[in-house]
Length: 225
Image (cartoon, rainbow, N blue to C red; front, side, top):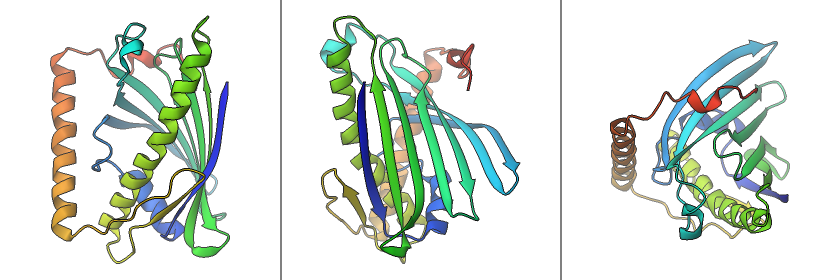
């Protein structure tokens, strides 16, 4: 099993990050996200508990295509929002292709100790594969792809936050991953990128429907949360 731990600082208040978390799709970095559905949402005391099902494309390297023919994978995202503590915990795991590789991620969003007007996202991930003879190589591949995806996910999230709260600077600081090269897009660029992302997502969803894919919940059958 491979383990990753890191953090990212978003220069937005926790309240804005909490709002933006539910509106981060679509964005220019999320064209691989085909759909998102909230399957459970309830209040437990003062906490908001949610469970969402996301369908994403599953791009594989050439060697991986021999093992996996599925083009898409379903992912469960569970979250707990505690407004009193100013803390959000998200737990994400794949429920498809688990025989090949599993990726479990925990992210905690809370005010940054260095600046309470910023938000720190503390991230942990566990990547595993039980395929005999190939498990180590698959784990290594999964870890490297996960690291690259962190930067893309942060860039897309900042784009969504800047769309919702345009007066704040579009900046995120990653650690220990590569520093983010900040770009402040114009209003026209932001609108065009959003249109392009929405158009691409709609196109992929249409292709999926044309393939007569089964119900979105099919892969979750028999999987306990």
